[in-house]
Length: 81
Image 1 (cartoon, rainbow, N blue to C red):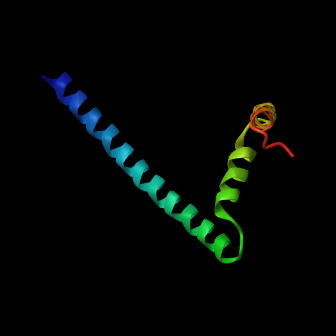
Image 2 (image 1 turned 120 degrees about the vertical axis):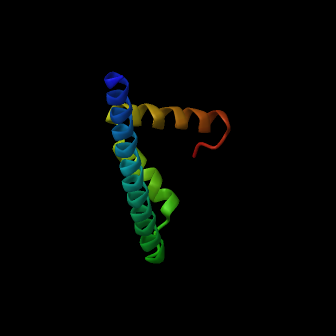
């Protein structure tokens, strides 16, 4: 019976940690949204900024591969310049 009590307590602690982290994640997401709003108010395009942030987070080789694929798709669809 003590083992079940221990497992229940351990589970509760894990759940509470996850809940706290989810709250922190929401707060950070709200902060990021505010920064994009501030940037938009200054004349920057949030959608393009999100793309740049995503690209900067990528490994250089992955980014180059994605850009090459995009160029190939654009060329296939007659969108290349």
